[in-house]
Length: 431
Image 1 (spheres, helix red, strand yellow):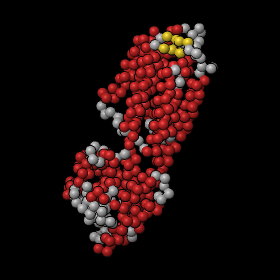
Image 2 (cartoon, helix red, strand yellow):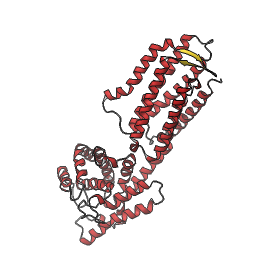
Image 3 (tube, rainbow, N blue to C red):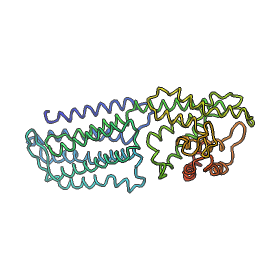
Image 4 (cartoon, helix red, strand yellow):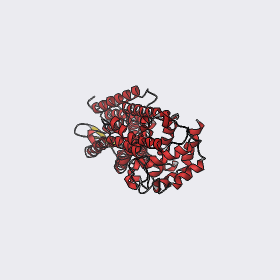
């Protein structure tokens, strides 16, 4: 029992995480990550066989060598599978998952090579007596640790290089966990008889669960987003809309963001936080209409100058409502973006928009994105005072507004994503 205390402790921690995860994930509204769920199967197996081999290597007089080697082969195999899966998971989190099957296979290639070396040299495995315990050593062990270090290095570098693609609230804790694992790996290399390997998958499980996969945090995010979207839909319904404008503009923003990521000048703005914040804030861009009289919102004909002046107030009022409603929010980045899209989405590139007459880069970046999505949906959807315009006419309106109404570089991104925009348009009209 003295030889497996650490493994038993790690296993209890892992089983507790799995139990909590399974208990909370029953809510079907919470998005599930199948890669993480696969890790929750593999990681306990790795710890279990770590414990088994830690015991058998210290009781070679009771365990036949062939059985001992077989158990070690299973134990050595689990990290060979676990580490590339974790790398794939981090690639997915940082939006860098390879698109082709060949590149996906390459992720597992080092592990496959290492596995071949492990099996080939397994008969030569030695059991060495240390000061406090016996431990295994040989080419197979070197292959295992080389594989672990290779994948860990890739995971660490990827996390650091693509840190902007990870939510800011997760960064410090995730890097801290990776730093602890780096210390464990280093310590294990210099003191092989300590047998700390079970801590590596345990800390990975804890780090990924606490930072990314906690169902409680996911549930809170889902419910918060649903509340915001429902509130925005309620506001939209006042001008005879079904809330379709809210969902369509949000989807147009999402498509546009995907294209902007490829833009050399603007991609730097698209962090994980920015992407999520503008997507969640987009439904509230017209929230100021809640203060606009129904006689103006639902008027079937053209507005008078006085009525149009009142209508334009919705942008300014929207910003004020956002500031007042979310003033105690602990996420100032979201508050700022929500304010920007509500107040400034009617500003124009040439400075002739409202409410503040901002121009070019004076207009917040989020509002420039929102402006294109809002106008495109406004002209492509049926309103109480006119029918929807032909789709090509809608695209021409956006093109004609490049450099006057809209940021010309963002217009280019919009047209690069034209096929995806059309797809969103068609899908929304089929419902």
